[in-house]
Amino acid sequence: MPKVHVTASINGEPAEFLCDPDKSMLEVLRNTLGLTGTKEGCGTGDCGACSITVDGRLVCACLMLAVEAEGTEIGTIEGMAQGEALHPLQRKFLEMAALQCGICTPGVLIAARALLEKNPDPTETEVRFGLAGNLCRCTGYDKIVRAVLEAAAEMRETVA
Ligand code: FES
Ligand code: FES
Image (cartoon, rainbow, N blue to C red; front, side, top):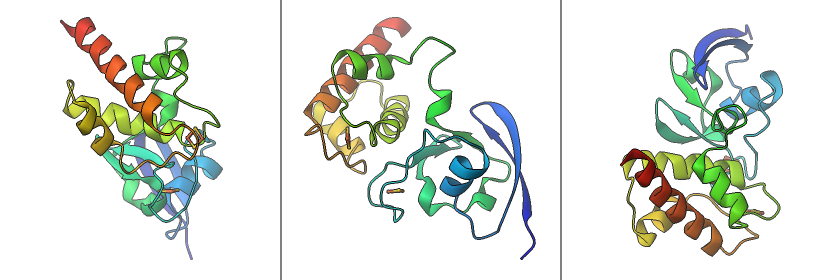
């Protein structure tokens, strides 16, 4: 099967790659592009570990064909910090110990950022609903939810 040439933008930088037409975006991110921050948990769209954004929309990279990236803007965890400066969500997760093994964390952070872009002042219920597609076997979720709420408050203050 001939490989397909794909041109996209990844974390604001132009990117291009060759891939088999049946490869998932997750496989290409991790194995072709070396962006291993995006994790594979289930590979079937159930755990959210592979969460990325595609044109600002939250997507499971394991359910997306890499060829579908053509012409899109992809956002991964590698683009979240600005150089040495962590995103407020990343900082709060560290400060509030909202991670343990860390496998779910990149996906949770990407989902939380997508949530706060749509809703900068979510209730606890809205945070829980927004992260419902991201499974964590370690934290019990409470610290994650608190960290997202604190980051949201800080981000609102920065904007105000
Ligand atoms: S690896 Fe994609 S949802 Fe679990
Ligand atoms: S911190 Fe281990 S799965 Fe979430």
